[in-house]
Length: 396
Image (spheres, rainbow, N blue to C red):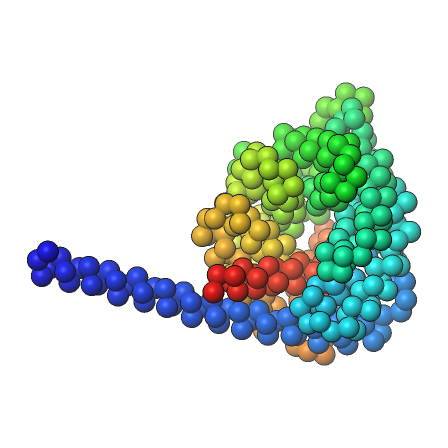
């Protein structure tokens, strides 16, 4: 080896070890950021718990008032589910006691058949409760709830019906992918292939009909109940029928990632990766990775952001990286977490109705919950923080 070759080898070693050191330093700083955000989350929810009456659930904060909802609101499960996560992190028994209490208030929903959102309402709190405590009574609720959700499945259409209102014959929204984990878990608990069949059939027909060639997803597909044929495809909460409503894209990414975990079907992994690639490379995604409420909203950059879409995406990407270790997925999740942990989006302690994140968008076309905190944004943010924290600590 001549002198030039030796110098080149030495330079490569220096570069390699310098890069490792920088990466380690960046990850160490991110861990500190995550812990700081989790501490803010704990303090906010400690204060929030002081003013939440029994059997009601904080959903958002508008015009100086916390909006409380009943168990039948689709977001009811996120408050106790967040308390479970905060107990897991902090070991604070205040969170444990209230997580148990507010989770128990939801039990009547196990027999409720009037919504497709039972995964959000029951599996998030009861699933977290079981994982954290091992209390097997939670499994009975999960199983009974799965029977209620399965009652909304039409074999002719091959999908779980989303809504029972308005003029649609059989509407199915992309959000519904988030409720399939409940069925997959029930299948394992009860050794009953019916639940698995319903979840897989729903996912497969969603794959067939909900996606555009660029791997973005429609919000709603309406089906004919007699033939199972598609009647029309449209949006309800997005800008237009052809646009990419931000939270819907994140629901799809998260849902197909979970379905790969639950089934091992590589078709679901492929779709999750395609959706991830579409989202992280979208030309209208801001540099801080917090999307506008719709990727095709007409007044970008003067459009509301949606931290809920960002938090859901981050949590999904962290899990997706486990199955498809593309560095871009993990780095994008890190960028989202850094942004959401900044003063631009993370509320100061004692403000924001004691919710954690600012600047979510619920339903802009209906002029509902625009630029406010929302409980599901907090929930998926906490989940993303815990997932990233566990990943960074396991790598150190």
